[in-house]
Length: 177
Image (tube, rainbow, N blue to C red; front, side):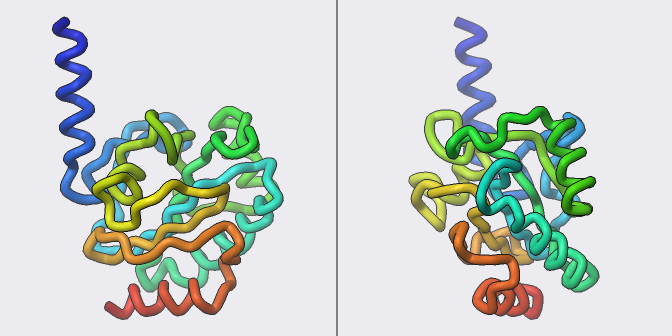
């Protein structure tokens, strides 16, 4: 009974986090972290997968990151295996793949679920029933733009390329805001 109460308290405290910065995460190396290191920056959260038709977007995401990181953009990659089992690899394999194949230098995190009962609290706070961008993620490489204030701005689907004029305008507007 104590264990159940502790688990419920933990879930409730995580689910009621005030901003995207308050959620506990694990980085790709398994170290505890959060998005708090990026407070005051514009974030682009992307659920990624290594064996997807959209995997080539890693290249564009890295280019976006390189182009705008000095202006305050942080691309954050969240591996997810919920869509067609297209991210079956371990975190170490994902890190090596992203680094060697696409030269990824933006922050990568441990695998999470973005939909369903086990949806990570970060995504629940953004797209869950009480989130500002309600609705399930439809596929890999969905992009969620977060403003400097930690508030969700807009969601872009998999078909929106990292070089999309609409995405770039939204990023530039968020950086200027």
